[in-house]
Image 1 (cartoon, helix red, strand yellow):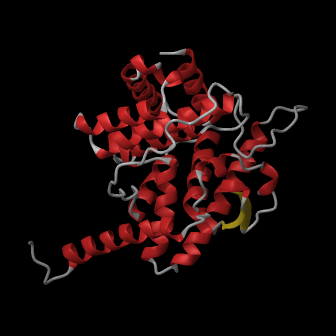
Image 2: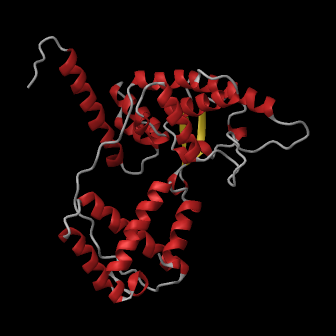
Length: 300
């Protein structure tokens, strides 16, 4: 692995909080490119034609469309980083087109499974349990991205607001709702958070403080806590993540008859086509209920 690839992976870990699994995938993809492009100068010396030839070879090797697309994305991100660092003056991957592939439906949870997760989180006593309940209730009540949720300041919720103003992608602000359950969970967590603070010490500005470098809870730690709750609730942890709670928020709104434009606004999607994917999830779930519960339904 070249020093440039190592620097890129370090940036992904520190600035974008990439998981070990994601970092390993990027490392494999870039190592493959570096080896294939060895005679052309490697990633740092390869011409545009050489990079395009490497990508064309991925299809000839019989790789799936998703794997080829990921390797292309890895190269594109690496070359953007290289440009930003001044290591290259051009982006030899800019003309590479991604292979066409079907868009996968987002994972989601049923209402019963969300309730089971909340019940599992409440089985333990103490501030850690109250913190996890507050995190889950807020994610499910508002559809916040995990980065938006964990970056909330404590002063944003001190006065028990019914709505929060959050800054999402592209620096755009939006209003997100907090239902009664979320507000109650926040109050319980604030009481425990304040009680745990040592006297004569300054309060952390973050709603969910931590001793790590960021000063607040990380997405990875939140995911680990959800995994533990999923195991307690007898739900496959692979189906549960902070982002899945956002998916559940959107899917359950649409199942309840919410307008697609309203859901788009609540999620902070710039393009409604991004929101429309949830209509497919909701329709599939309704079809499954109809097929399994209707008295005249028959197996195909």
